[in-house]
Amino acid sequence: MKEWLNNIRPPKFLRYLFFIAYSWYRSFKSEQDDAHRTAILFLSMFHMLLLLGLFMNFMSEIANSLGKFKTVLPICFLTGVSFYYLFLYRSKWTHIVKEFEHIKRREQRIGLIYLFMCFVIGFYPILLDMFFGIDLRDR
Image 1: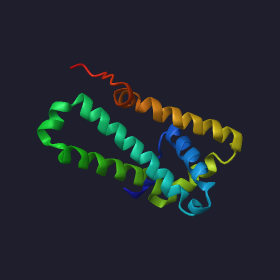
Image 2: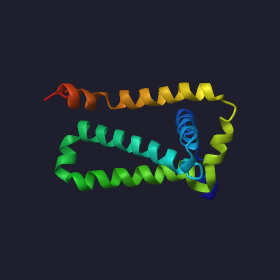
Image 3: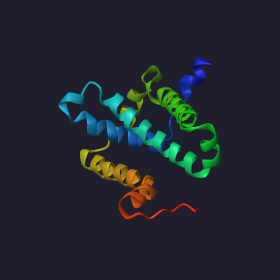
C-alpha cells in the first residue's frame, strides 16, 4: 500500500499550477519557509470550492435533502485527504519544484496570469450573478 501511495502524482497541469503558486508565495519574505503549504492550501481551497459549486448546481435535490453541513463536510474532507497524498505525503512537493525549476521568472509570470484566468473562468457564473444579477441556471 505504501508503494502505491508513493507513486501517486497529480496531473501535470496541477503540478504546474502548484509550482506557479509556490514560486509566487516564495518571493515573500514571510512565506519563504511555508510557501509549499500556502500553495497547497490555495489550490485545495480552489478545487474544494469548484467541487462544491458543481455538486450544489447539478445535484441540488440531493444537497437540499441532506442538508448543507452533510454536503460540505465530506467534500472538504475528501479534498483535504487527496491533496495531502498528492503533495505533502513524503514531501512530494520537492520533486514537483525540481521538475519545473528550469522555468524562468518571466515564464512564471505568464503562468501566474494563467492561474488567475483559471480562477476567473472557474467562478464566472458566480461573478455574473454577484455583479450583474445574471443567473445561468435553468429555473
